[in-house]
Image (cartoon, rainbow, N blue to C red; front, side, top):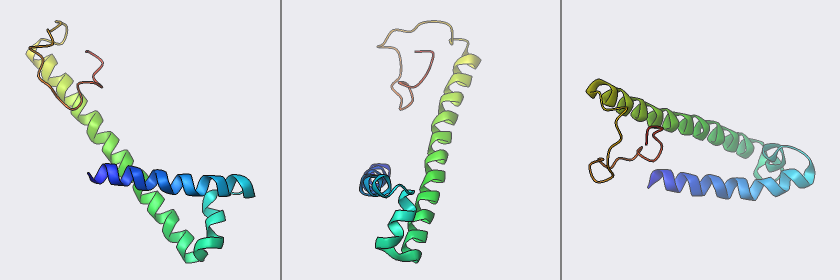
Length: 100
């Protein structure tokens, strides 16, 4: 739920700022200073900076779960054997796994 809200909020922010920056030929954060003031633009830049690292952390968690799943399969010895769809356990990262 938090990820969805953050995604929608971030997309709305980018959608609102992108046309302004393009029209004025400056980065969107610089263009936002006129509407938000200097401290408002700083707060917005800080928010974007923090959410960027949050997104990187989320990507690392997903990659770690995929690596853990691959390591478990390798330890069990079934990483090279195709499995039927009915015997495959469902998982969040199953659609991202390269061995599928």
